[in-house]
Amino acid sequence: MSDREEPGEPPLPQPARFWTVEEANARLVELKESMPQLRARVVRLRKVFDELHRLSGFWGKEVDAVDNPDRALKGRLDSEWAALTKQVEDEVSQLQAEGIEVKDLESGLVDFYGLQEGEVVFLCWQRGEDEVGFYHSLEGGFRNRRPLPDRSRATTAHSPGPP
Image (cartoon, rainbow, N blue to C red; front, side, top):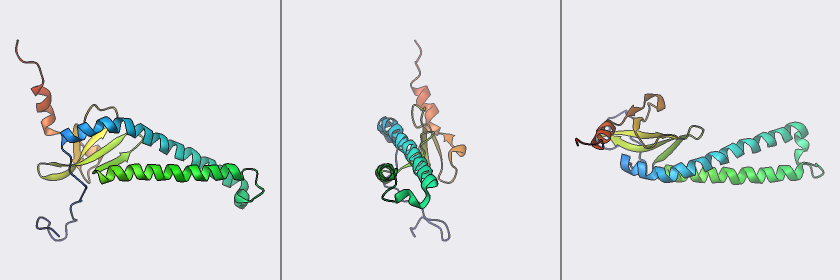
């Protein structure tokens, strides 16, 4: 237990790093490209799963029989399932190692570990947003996200001055 923790309180998470808003926004350039690819792999995984389930439902225990006409198809699907699963797990693990949490691939929801007023929070971004502009507590989730306090100041700082 660290000096900052009270007895009985859960320990603070120890992510690989804490992101500033500026660093998270810079990392979004790559994430905006890689997240659709990751999502496409998950969509393909669902289709492979459905096809494997269909084959197993149709053939039952005979699905792996040597003389089964769909045995080669099942073998290809099993291999594809294994390869896609490894790719997705590796990509998500790499992001987690960086202090980035993939919350929902469908909506493109990603959280970066950050600090707000000394509190460990998630800096929150969702596909379609230009930048990281929100945060929420670790327990609060997407529904409890709030605008970053300095976001409005940054916006007004860039507004045109008097002529």
